[in-house]
Image: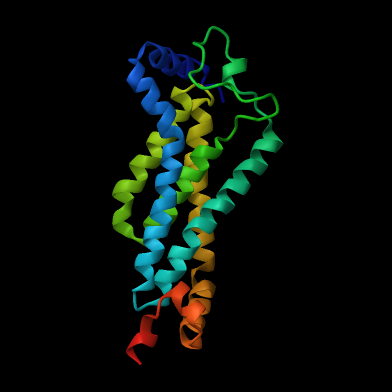
Length: 204
């Protein structure tokens, strides 16, 4: 898989872009992670007030699925050991971001895997969020090529792979975690009920 030509085109456009655009993409590549973190908390807090323990299960699993997708991505990265394009691609514009140290491999993009996983997991927890999380994830993935630290195929595989891993993780564990949440709600324990929300316990 060789996307060097597309990488050159994107990094050339990045270098010729206005300074504020360059800065925006450099900031966005990390800011997107913070936005997803805020959304994890917001979705969990909303789920606490839902009657069904399944809502709590999906909210709790969203960050866990994202973390699992990161572990899978990092494992593949270590196995494949693809050199970063900012060192490997000849005649490419200098990257906007500092090129990672040797041994910090390129394929797949961990940022993109995290973004794809978070976007899918949050959408499973609250469907209408897909209208927000998907554009954030795609823009995060693109930003990694724009700043020059990943090939286009790195971010494409990371984005799609992270989403698939997260979806499988959530679907596999929603039932068991939902039963745990229901038990915690029924326990009457103050700490457990604070974490899961009172749910039906409030109505009994």
